[in-house]
Image (cartoon, rainbow, N blue to C red; front, side, top):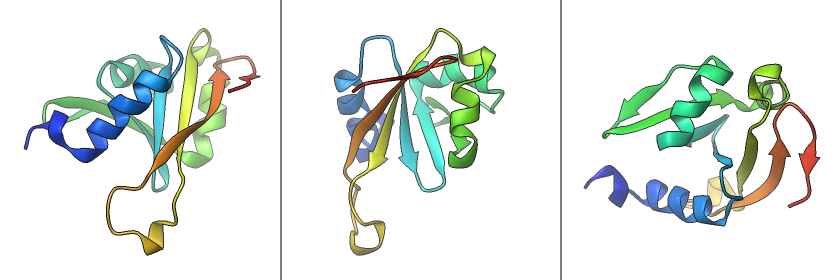
Length: 114
């Protein structure tokens, strides 16, 4: 199975199409928010996070407790973030959890209505 065929990547790409054009999509995954592909490459130096590659796909993330600080830092100015949260109970579900974009945030400034 290629990275593009993985369920999480199909979900990421579907949510990316729903996100505002040019925004960085961050997916809630456990205690972290993750970005993939070009979003990860843009985000890694701004958030000062490690850029890794899995299955040929660049990825980076940050702990959920530091997300708002990183988004509103001067290094994130000019970026728009689409935040996708898990919409199902993690403990009663065995497959891929459904996620939805719940916040749009203008980095370095303020929250934008979704």
